[in-house]
Length: 230
Image (cartoon, rainbow, N blue to C red; front, side, top):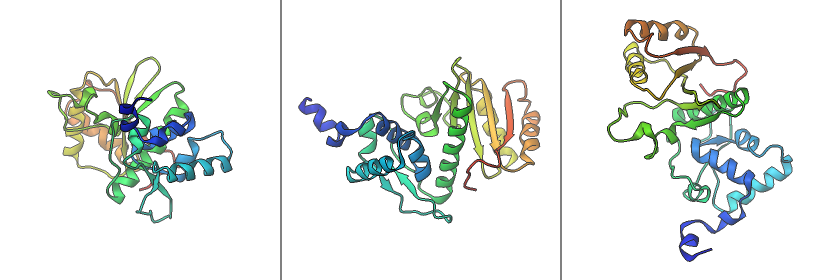
């Protein structure tokens, strides 16, 4: 390894295998994972092996437990300043408030569920969509909104994902919907909601703004069994 390369990456990166890299990459991409979500990314390794690996990653400074504990005592892990460098991602930051943390963890649950049901698909997180090389963030584009994620199906269809834990005003839904209508690189929008009344409210807003023919929108209830943090 060249001197320049050894200075640009943490020394511990040499000890990462494919399981470590995949788990830490998702930790950086989302910004936070629960212990259960993180351990799931090491499957099908044995639980004892996973515990050993997590302890090794913590000791290497690539993983830390979040100081903020949710009311249900869920353990949260966040990346450190070294994690993104170790996996070669130019992303940074973690949820800074309990509300953002709950939303992030729910988005992880939704992403995992969608990928289980769409084999071969890829999920781009909100953090990735905010990256400087992402088309949605390029100069000259409207950057007033970002979806919570983008599900890209094997055939190339791009589905924007919105996870709605707290209802917005009609004006806010109208503004978001106009943003989606202006995007030629999004084929469909799926709103996953907790409140039943939003199944009707969001489509009504679209009709009021004459946007029903511009974008394909589906408003769906989050499955009751899916882990969410309201």
